[in-house]
Length: 88
Image (cartoon, rainbow, N blue to C red; front, top):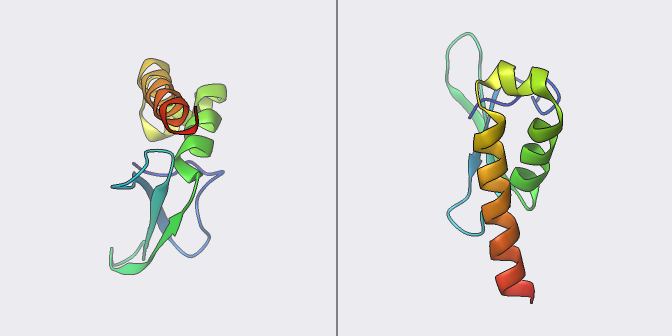
């Protein structure tokens, strides 16, 4: 999903995606805004959880990236349940 202004990288158009591992982690993809070419990708531990918490608390950012509070809450609940099952 597109990153809101608070999580965007200055180098270009920024997208945050769920990792294929634990859902609280994320891949950040940054593209050149004029060409759409990939500038870089990076993996960040815990980023998806932080980003979703930010979206939960900021209706303007949810609107900017076109997600509902319900969608955000659902994914945050899934993250919390997975975390509890692993961490005890």
